[in-house]
Length: 102
Image (cartoon, rainbow, N blue to C red; front, side, top):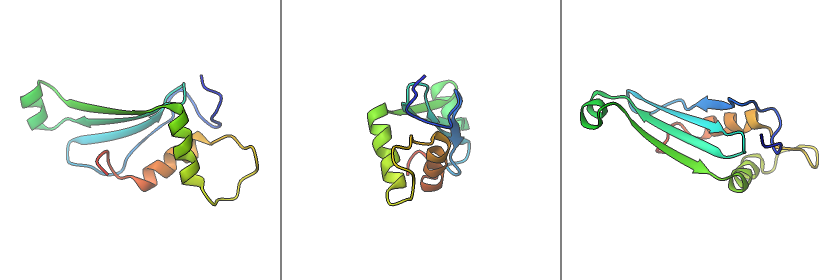
């Protein structure tokens, strides 16, 4: 497991708040520090056209994920040399993005 992040577990993830009906978007921080965004379409159209559901996966490699973290906390007070907080990062992503397509 990557030790770059504090306050994270194997299952550090959040579900984004919005999206089309019968869809779900999850944002996860993988054990190696990769950011993974999963979009699932469980609609009737997806089931009839593709045999079950449609899934899109977006991955952001660990160095780029850390750059995203720095954008979200830019200007905030925090002690020097503090490791990024995984839960806070995922909460900020959930606040900023409502769905996979935003």
